[in-house]
Amino acid sequence: MNVTEISLDGVLLTEPKVYSEERGCFLESYEKKRYESIGIKEEFVQDNHSLLAKNVLRGLHFTKNNPQAQILTVMRGNIFDAVVDIRKDSSTFGPWFGAK
Image (cartoon, rainbow, N blue to C red; front, side):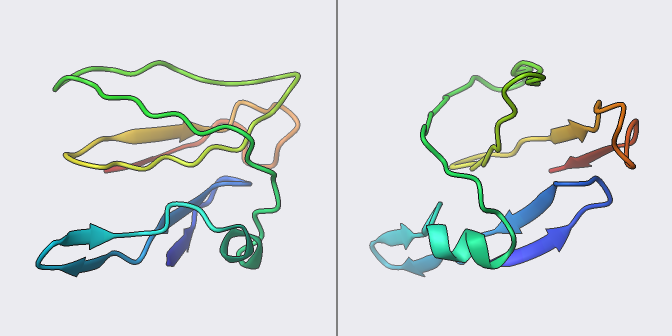
């Protein structure tokens, strides 16, 4: 897994290793020990899948009282995902990061 640290506190950009062959491909979207080795210790208790039409804006999400860690996986196509630090007490409050 490739890991890139982003200049926003608590945000990592990861890219899993994809094993491809003539029948298709395989990747591990989550493996607890691998994520712990890069500092992600949150316990993931829910996994969702969303299928969207082309050119759709999919919600703005934040949690104030019950923060959540999120893993985003793109199965097909392209997305633009943006993260904004809105925690007023954070050293990285205000800036944003986006990735395709």
